[in-house]
Length: 466
Image (cartoon, rainbow, N blue to C red; front, side, top):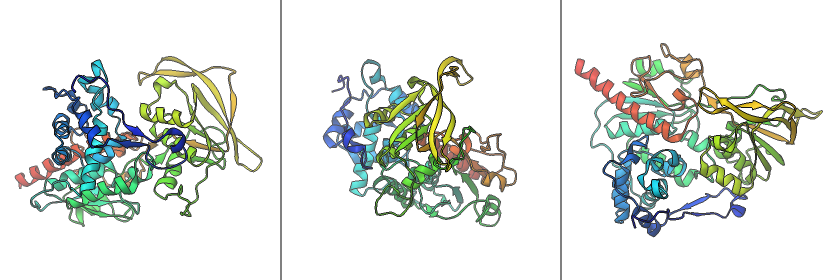
């Protein structure tokens, strides 16, 4: 089996069917398919896939157990490094990380590591198997701000080390971007996210919802009055960006954050919910990342014709290849090398269209990508009654502005050490989108993992000095 060049195909909903429902697109592997795919792994002595994983899962080891049909041990191997395997198996960009490093991919397709991780996590959930926790508490308390991927990872790792951890979440439901930012058809909330949160709680982690750090309580108060020995900030980046072009104030212009939050967290896509969501007959989504794909595919399922407007070519699209492929299959229209110049309004102030200009790629910019340059005289209009801006996000400045001695950069991102998560304030650590700006789930998890180690070293070092 190790000589088989191609992956075992994964089953998916038919594009024509799934374009009209919010059920999960990818159906995953069954037992036989997972074992067959696992048999393709070469079990390299110098496993580059591990280095390609931001949380350093021992990939060859867990895959070896899948090959042998020992799924429980495979789950414990994954669980030693990752608190969210069912999530990662679905939304991680494996093609540029672990699978991108797979030696099998040199002369064929890489091992389908993500789909195998998903299978193992789903199997464990179905069997009621929980991750292994600490044998005893060590007497120290850590506060984690935010229950997104970085916060859940940091909390889970600290709990395994014996720390008493409390997560403070601003919203009414735990999960952060996993519940409000990623659509149901990519990441089921009850069947996957809620179960992963329950696993973290099973390690002894407490979660307090409806607590806004900076208003309900400050970081300084957590340290000085509430008795916490350290704080991790994993509050994400939820402040949307706009282009600043004429017409952005029109009725019918939304940030992708608002649109997806209404659909996901508030379940506006369900007919038995009263949450309103505005989605016209013709929707234009501006942006080319995963959030743009999510917003576009959500609007499609709500009955709209959808255009994605992106100023570079398909080769530069930052979204995962899988998401672009699925969007195309479902009928999303891509207007590439195109950039908005104005949002058009009717006499009532409602969106009536979007004026765009054609672009061409010039010399590379500071990011290394070729800079898009306008083609004079190439403007045209796209009919639309809803425009969704998916241009990225930045952190809400509430936490940094209410914390004494916490340094931020010009984008209001918290400045933190990349290896430890340490900030300018002693005992306060940070990671994920609050530090980097909008990025991927797995990078946020990697930052949460690094910070957990940094916090452990800080507290142990402090105790040794006393």
